[in-house]
Length: 383
Image (cartoon, rainbow, N blue to C red; front, side):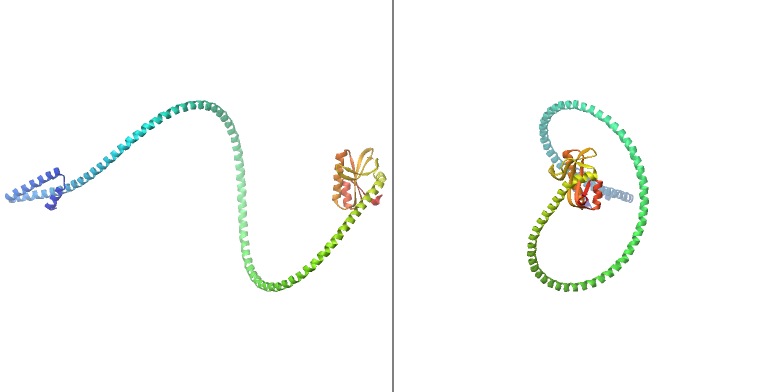
């Protein structure tokens, strides 16, 4: 480093340090001048040695100066930071004073809250008494819980037994899975067969496509035929209108015929009942040993019409005869209808009832069913 550079470095230092270094440099310069005036060979050698030492000292001095310079810069930065810190402390002091005021107000609120807490303490003590009673109840509940735990222990034993059973079931399941694996192999084989069938299906589909083309051609022909059909249909509608008029006229005549037939059926039915009134007493006594005590009549019992009703005696016991008359016994519902009539009469008059059904003709299977149900079926040709 040159002397000018060294002087520049020294001038940047603080005044006390700069004065010390300047004095040292001046002393070094004076000694150098004295050595130049009285120099000998030995002195020259000694001077050379001194110069070398001074050079080393000079280097160390320069290093120290650089360190001092850096320290000076750090000191300046520290002073700046201290100034900033002082400013922050001032602001913090102001905030602290403001906070103290807030704490004073909070203290007042705290004292008020303490009074409220004192009242709450009284309520708490009262609540503790209640909790003491609740504690007793909890003790009793604990005893019940212990008992329940014992029951749960027994249930646990049953559960463990069930787990063992499930383990056996698991073994059976694994065996079933092996069987399913074999079935899977068979399924894969079947899929291959289906793939071949798919190929055949695709070939068949191509054939169907050709057939579809032929069908489209046929459809066009049918469309033309449809047009002809629609024309024919219009002609039929006209004919239908004429036919509808004729049907209405026929229906009017048929209604009159139905009325006449219905009247005839009722007349025939009443005729069968009238014959039954005359022939039943002798027929019942001769064939079934049933004696008619009062004339058999048509009656209404509990709102239900009873075709044949009378008081009879069988085997010395008096009972009632309840009967229906039908032209033909060819429907099981007629037996059901008679049974319903019997039930109504039994509820109304009490005592046993003999069910009788009078008809011109009865099918064999229905005769057997009636006999099983205890019903007497009498056909008009029998009397």
